[in-house]
Amino acid sequence: MFHLRDDEIAELLDLASVTEAVEGAFAAWGRGDADTTQRVRSSAGGGVASAMAAVVPPFSGGKVYSTASGAFTFVNILFDIEGRLLCTLDGDALTRYRTPAACAVAIRALAAPACTTAALIGAGRQGWYHLEMLASELPALSGVAIHDLRPEAAEAMVERARAAGISATVASSPTDAVRDADVIVTVTQSTAPLFAADAVSDRALICAVGATKYDRCEIGADVIERCASVVCDDVTGSRVECGDLIQAAHAGRFDWSRAIELSAVAAGIVDVPRAGTTPVLFETQGVALQDVAAAALAYQRSRRKTPKASDNNGDGT
Ligand SMILES: NC(=O)c1ccc[n+]([C@@H]2O[C@H](COP(=O)([O-])OP(=O)(O)OC[C@H]3O[C@@H](n4cnc5c(N)ncnc54)[C@H](O)[C@@H]3O)[C@@H](O)[C@H]2O)c1
Image 1 (cartoon, rainbow, N blue to C red):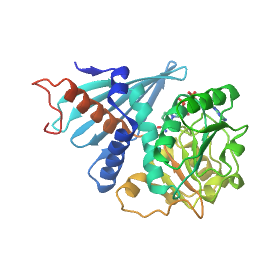
Image 2: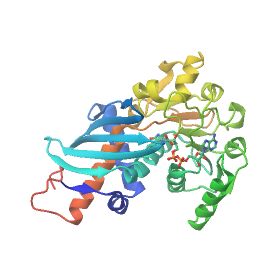
Image 3: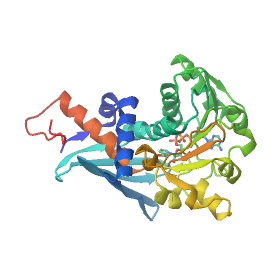
Image 4: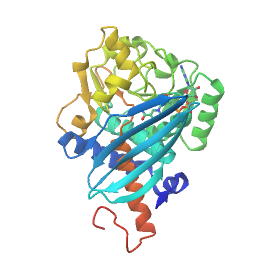
């Protein structure tokens, strides 16, 4: 069995290439040329197991993972379109690239022109990868304000950012972080809204990454009401998983008919005005489509590095 480990995947992938692959996969889904399932979860006896699958021609696959004490153990599977098993892959490095890639796709389509300022709330594992994404997607970026419930985490990330050549400062509160930010990324496990609607600039694109369960909340109903458009990585999945929108809908302050698919935006099927005169919200919980797109890229690159006569790259190469 051919298996790609996290350290190998981290060597093989780069954010720009994964973003291209993920953008292409969302556009294919929007055109009806790719498909992805919702996540299913099972729990008993203290254990939790989850699964999700997607077809992104010429590949298909998905991931199965367990969650214990807040830690995830992922296994991804990749097939070619004829159903031949190509490989299995660890999931940490794939998640590291495919999660910010979804926000990068949203930024390309929905952010105000010439963004110079950004805010990052949540200086954890995913926070760093989203900071790298902001630096690469916003060429005119002059500074990122970083806030975390743990000040030491925000301080450490600012130091790491500066060492990487990214201009960053610590913000003492979420409100201080988002004020005047053109792009806001929230990537926390918060269960209460992080900032109020009047803290957000009209130019802001908010990329909400952390509220991946119905009982989590980063973005309050007042912010959602102010946003001209609400774009989701998967509207059907968001109805089950996106705490921000579920709670706002439950309070009668958000109607699901407002939710727009990122896939339709990426495919050019719907025209969503960029942030600028009013803020725009992008909500992501992550879909298997992203995992399969990133896994396929890692697989193809690994086979190009060490080709074997019996290998099928799934793309005729
Ligand atoms: N959308 C996706 O595809 C996707 C993928 C991976 C992870 N996630 C979600 O992103 C979130 C972060 O994941 P991670 O691996 O970086 O976790 P992490 O624990 O490494 O980091 C989370 C950080 O958020 C901070 N935080 C928590 N509550 C806060 C609050 N109220 N205000 C400010 N900071 C707060 C914590 O102190 C921590 O530093 C989780 O909710 C996770 O489920 C989403």
